[in-house]
Image (tube, rainbow, N blue to C red; front, side):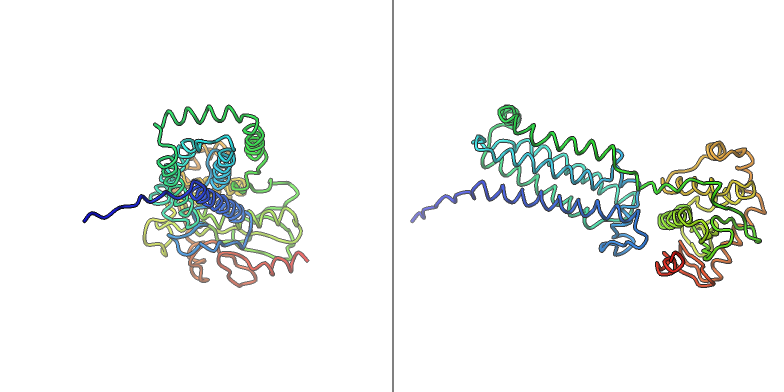
Length: 389
C-alpha cells in the first residue's frame, strides 16, 4: 500500500525577510556598541568593557590594537555603515514593484564580502592580536547568517541564474532611482562627513609642549613636567609598548596642560621586556627596554619629553624603530643615539628604575607612586578631583 505524500509549502517570503532584517538590526546595534566602546577605551580613564574577561578573551585588547583602524576609521564605524547599507537595500526591496523579490542577489554578494572580511579579522585576532572580542565574533555570526538566508531566499523565490539576477537587480534599481537617490545620498554624505570630521582620538595625541609648562629633573635625574611648586606629584612607572601606559600618560599630560600650577608628573621606566626586566620570563614587549634606553639618553641632552612622546607613538604602532629616523625627529645625532644603548651609565639608570620599581611592589604597568602609596593600572579619580577642587 503506497502512502500519499503531501508537499510542504515553503514559509512565506516575509518570514525570511524579517529574519534578515532582524540580523541586520542586531549587527547595526552591535556595531554601535563597539564604536562607543572603542571611543571610551581611548578617552575614558576608568573604562573597562563588560567583555574584557581574560587576556585572550578581551574586547578592549582588540580595540587597542592598530588593526582596529581601517582606512582611517575605527572598524566598528565601518560596521555601522555596512549594516546600514543592507538595511537600505532591504527598504528598496520592499517596494511594491519588486514582484520578483529583487535585490537579494545584491544582498547575497554584499553578505559574501562581509563574511570574507570576518574571516580576515578572525585571522588577525588569532595570529596577530592573540585576543578575541565577543561582540566582534557576534558580528561574524551575523554576517554568515545573512549570507545563508539571502542564499535561501534566492533559492526559494528567485531561482534564476545568478548573473542574470544581478542584471535584473540593476534594471529594478534604475526603475526606482528616485527612491535610491533619496535613501543613499544622505547615507554616502554621512560617510564622507564622518571620515572628514571625526577626530583621530585613537592616536591619543599629547598636548603641545609649551614654554609655559615647566620641565626639569629631580635630584636623582628623573625627568618631570608640570608645576614648579606642585600640590600633587605623581611618579609614573611606564612601558612604551603598554597601551594603558600611553593612555594614562597622555591623560595626565592633558591635566597638566589645563592645570600647570597644580600637578607635577615624574617619569620613570619599567619596560616589561624580558631582556631587561627580571620579572618577565618569556618574550614580551620586545624592544621596549631599548626604547627606554634611548629616552634616558635623550633626557641627558634635555630632549626627553619630545622623545617620550615619539616613543609612545612608535610603541603603539607595534613596529620596529629606526634609530636614524628617531635622531632626525628629535634633533640628536643618530650614531650617538645608537651607541647610547650600550652606554653603561644609561643601562645602569634603566636597571635602577626597574629594580626600585620591583622593590616598591610593581608587578605590571602602568604604576603610579603618589605620596608613598602605589597604584597600579589607574589613579583613583578622587585623588585628582581633590587637587583640582
